[in-house]
Amino acid sequence: MFSISTGEKDIRICWILNQVLKANLFLVDDIIVSIKQSDVVFRNYYFESDEGIDKYHLFVNRGNGAFLFPELKNVDYLLLIRSESVIPPTEDFIFQLKSFPEISAFLPVDIRKLKSFSRLKL
Image (cartoon, rainbow, N blue to C red):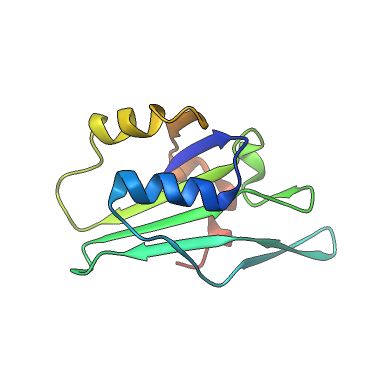
């Protein structure tokens, strides 16, 4: 998983990711989390390659003043890449994303350290 910090809207981040990943992220069912006795909605994007080898999830981390991943309050989006390929994302992939001026930071995240990762039903 990777964290993305930016001031851009989710549709713009999807466009950038689609360019770099050669993907077509699209909006799927929102993630709804009960926080402080109210439901908070977080947008969720997804793409699966034709072969089913690569699966990309883009999660919006902020919704109505709350966070999908409260441990990552300085992060706007999280990109989860699930792949059956033996080749993980390369430095080239990371370099390409960092080359977009809209992206302030793009950093790996260890999902084992995220207590709130269980909110995702993948």
